[in-house]
Image (cartoon, rainbow, N blue to C red; front, side):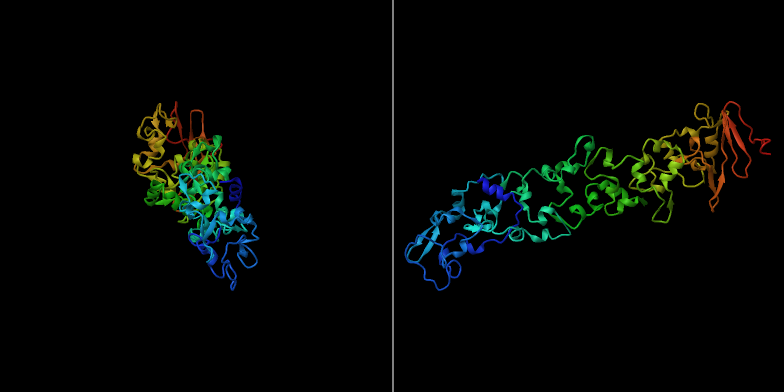
Length: 469
């Protein structure tokens, strides 16, 4: 294939009509009335030196791109007389071999069907054309889509090259060593234009698996009714591979809002690559605070606090938050437990003790904190030897962890709460916790003050101080 053709084929050309009128072999071409020879003109009965004139084959003259044999009036390069007297012609070589006498094509493993069938005139005018490389047309409607189903491209979101008819940006017109006549290996083709999607350095440490095999696992290369030419809307597209997550969600009592919204998965996950595990867009809790930086109301009407403000106003953060691990306690997709918790955790203020009800807390904390009556060597929250966690929690009417501790952040050490909700109306009772060198005390609302001491056990009740009497 000469360089002039190759250069022209690289232009963004739009494609056109098949030249059906030429027939299968151009046989008897000059004898077709009204096409090459004007009506009423008597055909020559002797050999002629020129085939084009005012009344004969005039349409072959004046094209922007001429086939060299036509431009040089060497029609006998391709045609020869079958009958001089009847002015009938035939091709000098069988049609499928004619063009390759001059145009040497090095064919690869995948061959465009017109090329394989020797049907060069399916795409090219053999005499000349107003389009590059003598194409029959310059747009996709007029050339490629005469064979390829136009309905595949009639979608809401169309790939740029398709929209302007530049099929050869991605496809070789004759043959290729890649599937679907692609100009480059599928894993590299899209990157040639979309270079920002190439994983590089630390930013590309974690890659979405389909990216290794090419983009068409998720994107239609031509057109789609989904944004970004996705082959389906998310989350359904994601669920086609992540079947485990889909099954988990189907069995979940609660679902994280973004998961079920169009495009929701990509609110938290980068669909291509990232420096973070699980393709997270940001580290936690920053990722979570993109949404939880204002009050959020759940589908059942439950308000969720402005977590960004809560963390800013309360400097003593729960360990998982300090370590950037909201998912240490919360399932990011769906859960059978309240507040998308990973494991069981009592939602009540008071609850009968059962160790399995505290599975979430004891994923990190030792369960002996509430199982052993003796607290020596186990906890600082003890009155002498008496384990006060055991005393509060391990009861028929036990106080749950939330009775004393904030689960996200607090103004006080050990996440001690300022106040606790009491009763069905949620009346907030101040705890009035005071820390001492040997222990501490609390004075919840109208209750009497109670204290504890690790080396010097405190009495059951503490007498009011002179200042407080």
